Length: 190
Image 1: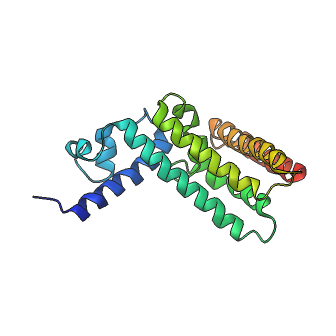
Image 2: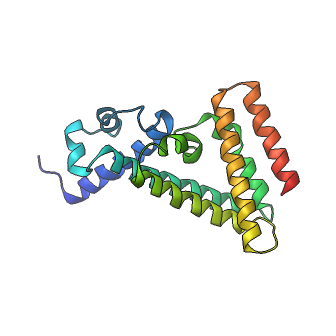
Image 3: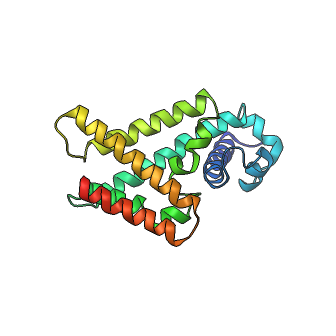
């Protein structure tokens, strides 16, 4: 049965969305094309009609996931009432973000993997990091653009690193201790 153009676009969108979740959950190399397509409710055979390669899907899914992450940050900032950095660090360094990889931070889930995926994925991550840094620069203190950018790099690095460390130890008291210490440190310093 022939698929309409609209159905094909909907199928592609569903694959990209599910791939973004599954890549964050299992890593780029932790899930195969057949399982990605099955999770999207499609057959393995349809993959190459929509994507040139798994790396192309990884880049597109990462771009979409990072856009979702930045939208969540903007939404959090919008509700912050003048305490945007505290709101973002509180949301980011939280128990839900610790436990829910599939819909959580793309950086904490996939940065190490992205470094091994090649230029297409690395370019997407560079753009995503830049977008997050620009958002942070809007809310951090500093004398001039250069200082705000440096502080933004430090803050983003600390948050991603802290969440990554916390996830590495699982749902344990140490994970909560890492997140709490980092939240306190970021609030005190910045």
